[in-house]
Image 1 (cartoon, rainbow, N blue to C red):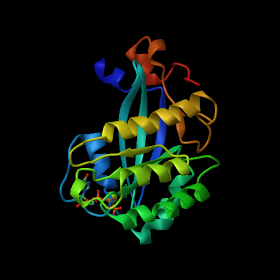
Image 2: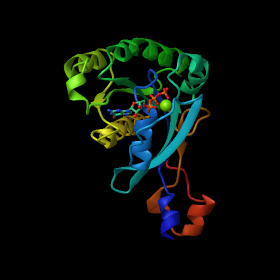
Image 3: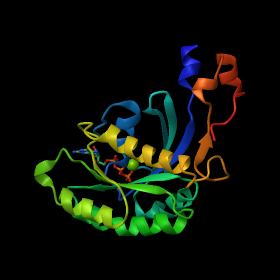
Image 4: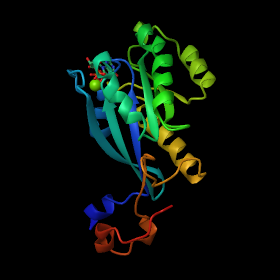
Length: 217
Ligand SMILES: Nc1nc2c(ncn2[C@@H]2O[C@H](COP(=O)(O)OP(=O)(O)OP(=O)(O)O)[C@@H](O)[C@H]2O)c(=O)[nH]1
Ligand SMILES: [Mg+2]
């Protein structure tokens, strides 16, 4: 019974992670979905997939379908094809590498060009915040850039775990708010939002399994 209840979520959001190679996208996703840091991380080839449930308000859970893209230039065309069906995204740079911050306008332009109008909703993330002495990009500067672009800003470290939960929660709440406000279509073809099962209306695990209850939207 408990296992089936675990599967209940209100919405599923398709989220894409982008940013230069080695900024730590895969490490961040491993920390968020597996709760651990893996020291040696190979460059992502093409695209990888992770998922996790997140409780945004008591009893209101969403499932995040997380697409980990490759930062290497040769995979750009593959990455581009994922913007269209994503409702949210995290644009990651490494706070100890100025070059990765300077690439952000290019990533942003690409997301805006290949996504649907107004989507994906993006969050800018300054990563590897544990390496304070090696910083090349200050928090204020990054925050100012994010604000100018209309994006929320967060900092995190996959190594220490600092700020990781908060960053994903912040983005998921942005998306949830947009869905509730009707700014993003829920359940439409390629919208990046799938309607799930409303926990309060599920009466038995059989119904939950069969997906017999109405959609939340
Ligand atoms: N100090 C520190 N190092 C990190 C952190 N996250 C990742 N790294 C290291 O950064 C390197 C690159 O990490 P990845 O997660 O593979 O980077 P990526 O963005 O997925 O790279 P691509 O798949 O090529 O796009 C690895 O050596 C990680 O161990 C962090 O939070 N702090
Ligand atoms: Mg990777």
